[in-house]
Amino acid sequence: MNEPMFSIVMPVYNMENYLQKAIDCIVNQTYTDYELILVNDASKDHSLEICKKNENDKISIVNLEKNGGLSTARNAGMKVAQGEYILFLDPDDTYNHNLLMELFEAIQYNHPDILIYGLNEEYSNAEGKIEYEKQIKPWPVLNCEKKDIYLDCLELEKKTLFGYAWNKCYRTKLLKEHRMEFKTIKMIEDIQFNLELLPYLNSMQTLSIAPYHYAIRPNASLTHQKLEDYFGLHTTRITLFIEEYERHMPELLPRCKETMAPIYCRYLLSAIARYEGTDIKKWLKSVYESELFNTLHPYMHFEGKKKWIYGPLVSRNIGWSIAAGKSAGFVKEKLPTLFAKAKQTR
Image 1 (cartoon, one colour):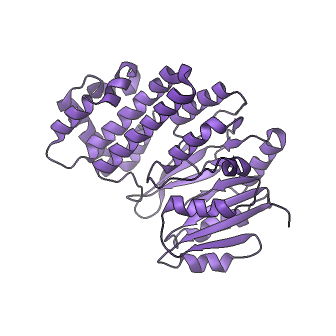
Image 2 (spheres, one colour):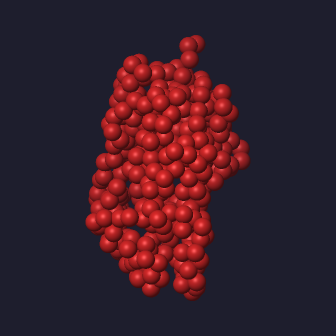
Image 3 (cartoon, rainbow, N blue to C red):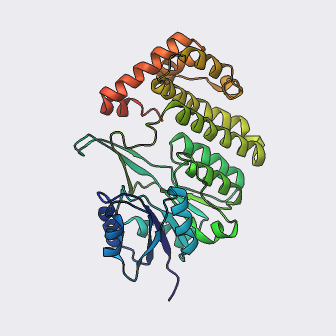
């Protein structure tokens, strides 16, 4: 049997409400040279039964007896993938039926190491009705020089398109040659994977399409975590970015810090909103004295809406910073659709 063009790895854990719809999106693809690998991560609901119902010569199951998390499931699927290219798609999202065809057409011309596409963010209410949609697409470009690849990754991060694994199509041989694996770090496993792969990329193509429908449901996101998880993990994310550019592309390090500064402020504002302890002033003072904040502070030059939103953080005004963060948190909780529209400053 010939190797398929695409291997689609889909990790599954307690996804009985969404899984069949995701599988149907693959089954109904207009391009059919693929294999779908469903990795059941010891689901406790009826997900495994749904997987078995769909099993055929193009859809296989990797059944893990012990729950290991998203990274473990992806790695298990990657290990058995036979396709020339590999995608890691989530089972609680949906995808256009021409996703693989659009990727195939681009591959035939350029054969890049990685292809990156856009998405539609779909914000649903508690009843599951979509109340707001936001389309995010990259500029179409093919980069074959290291510096250009690193530059474009900064532009992708500005649009929040770099850190995901599910909006990318990777050359399978490249991942296996360099023994790439997803690390078990919730929320930032994708960004770490992509940053570790970055030095090995000799070509990268971005497609100005948005075939991925990313479902954002109330209280379903990992970003609804306590401060210790949320802010610590996201500052690690930013530090990983800075360290990668410092190590492999030092001439772009100032550009990297300039890109990271507003992202850091966004996470800090959100962390203030999530803070539930009684010593928020003490904590915020320690943040403003931290090495990372002071590394990025010289690059916090904002205009327009960002200047108004992040001004208290830039000036290190603890009282106004708390007020700004708590106000943002209140709007997000009480008026989530309005918040989703307001935050689109990227």
